Image (cartoon, rainbow, N blue to C red; front, top):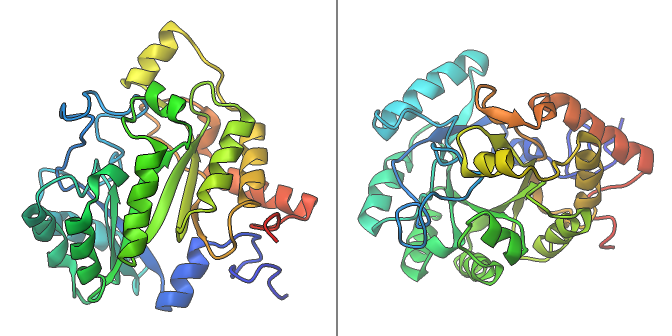
Length: 312
């Protein structure tokens, strides 16, 4: 059976990350999440303290390596586990926890360069904030991109500044766009993160975030629902004054609608995710990722829609 969508190996109707990796590297590729002991400008007092209110104590690095180990040890220990499942796997070290360009250039070099040229590493993924990129850093990362593939992951979550202020993002959408343009100038691939279900955002607001992001010069997109995690500032706020949480049905319908405004060439790296069960308060439905993805597929088939079909 021929694929209905050109950027999928399994008849999905969006540009799958699996398709991108398999066609680019001709092998199974896995990301290895690392913790390089960075912090964030809205945690250390530069912009604010406490971080984004939805963010846990690990700075989105709950699944990253043990910060008490050096980076290569983190990488090797996780790689060994993955190799049991995928013996011929190749790897992308993923600097995931906190903001991984928030530091002096010599620290960035010490973190990234040991992974350049490793036999089984095909690239490096770097999670950061747009306001923690500058000309010097992007020029350096561009120089690295001549030796290995560099992927920049930028947390945006929403285009709406009023929401960003509410959740203590301490970054405007205008600042974010400047960071994206800087990456584009230096030929760096960018994957943008969006969160559906942030406090008081309407369906139309979340759809608008996807529409606008789809018009930016980006190469990848990640979407997941809000995770209300115990111990976060948002969880404390919710306990005092609950706000509406997005339902599973609305989330699936929204993701399908969002995909229709994303250009087909943009790789969809994630359409759902999950927080650690022990700290997740809501939504409990987010734990069953496979069923969510299956229902997204089913709704796209039912409605006969595809990624980017409203852009043509």
